Amino acid sequence: MDLGYLFKFLTALKQNLTLALTLLTAVGALIAAFGALKSARETRKTSLAQILMEISDAYSSDKMREAMDSLWLYKTNCERNGKNHEEDFAEKLKRGDHYAEKINIYRRLFSHHFHKMRRLLNAGLVDEEFITQLVEREQVDFLIKVVEPLARAKDQDYDRRTFETFRKLHDKPK
Image: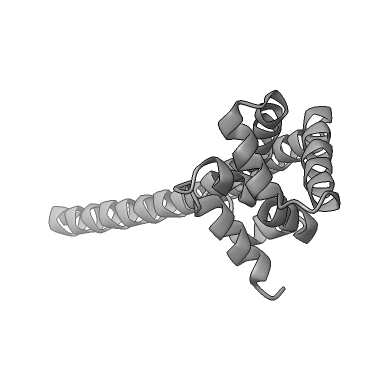
């Protein structure tokens, strides 16, 4: 028997086995990558569901309802008495009015709810579509028409980013 022929045969077999094992390893890695991608998508869905629940729970809480009711009542009472709620609030804050301080706490509660969503959006953890599905137009109207004037009355150099973000999302056609 020719040993050279046997050596060539074994060398070819080794190369083919190496190629087959490399191919099998690549297929296995590809299957694992698809599994990891599916797992990452499911994890993202779960995370978004958790964010949705936390934001929804915060908005529907008794504290938020009390804040919104009080802010709306303050604005409508000012209007009923022929006053601008922004100017009235600024004057009362300067005097250290206890009721104005309470209204300020409510203003902060409501505006910080939106501030958190803006930060999630800016961090890329949620997208604009998620936010626009979560936040109703009436909520943004309340933020812009009731809460922003109070923020401006408190500080002319207030942080406008949250208001601008939601104004932009609100003004976009759906």
